[in-house]
Amino acid sequence: MTSSPRQAPYAKDTGTTNRRHGLVLRGRAVAFHKSDAILVFMKSPGPSVLPLLRSRVQGDIVAWIMLNPENEFSLVEIAEAVRTSPATVMREVDRLAAGGLVRERRMGNTRLVRADTDNPVYRPLADLMAVTFGPVGVLRDLLGTVPGVDQAIIYGSWAARYDGQSGPVPGDIDVLVIGTPERGALDDVAEQAERQLRREVNIRRVAPETWAADDSAFKRTLSSRPTVTLIGNGGTDE
Image 1 (cartoon, rainbow, N blue to C red):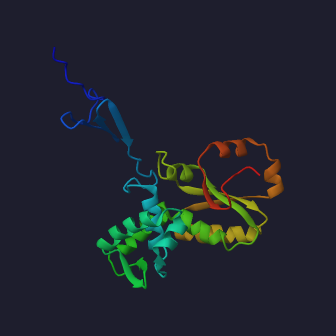
Image 2 (cartoon, helix red, strand yellow):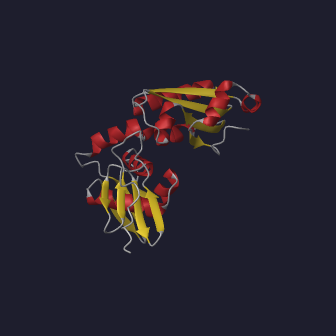
Image 3 (cartoon, rainbow, N blue to C red):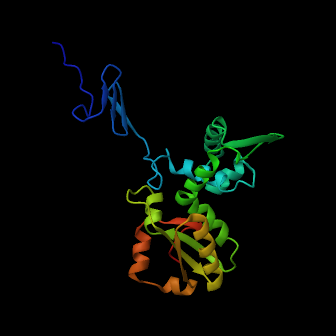
C-alpha cells in the first residue's frame, strides 16, 4: 500500500509553497520538513517607526552615524551606543560603505567610520533618520548633560512604534524624567530637541520620592506599555 505524500503545513494559506524541498513561505513564516520534525522560523517585522528598514537595530545604527557627522566611531563604540553587538554593527557598516554613505579608515586593528557628508544622499537620509530614529540618540545626549536626572524614558505613541506596533507616525514625543533636574534645564532640552527632531517634545518631571509612592493610573498604564530607556535602568518602579 502506497502512502500518500505528506502535505506541508499551511498549504491552504496564501504564500509560496515548494513541497519538493519541504519549504513553505507564508507571510514571514518559513517551515522546513526534516523527517517528522517541522522547524518554523519567524522573521522579525520591520520597525513601524520607519517600515522601509529591515529592523530597529539597523535604524539605530544608521541614525547614530548620520546624526553625528562630525565624529568618527569604532564599531565597538557604535555597538555600545545603540546597545547591540559589534558583529551586527559590522554588517550594517559594510552595507553603508558599499553604498558610499560612510568614510572609513583604520588605526591599527580598529576600524573607524563616519558619515560621508559629501554624498548627495547624506542630507535627506540624515533628515529622515532624525525624524524617525533620531529621538533616542538626540534625547539621550541632551539629557545626559543635565544634572539631577536619575532616569529618563520615552513613552507613548513613539515608543509603541519603536517597539514595532503599527500606527500613524507620531506627531510628538513624550518623555518621563525621574529625578531633581531644574525645570529650566529640561525646557532647554525640549527646545533643542524639537529643533533637531522637527516635532514637539513633552518632558514630564517627577521627583524620585513622588514616583516611588505613586499609584496613579498613569504609572500603571506606563508600566504596561512599551517604553524606551534613555537614562537609568529602564524600570519605572522604584
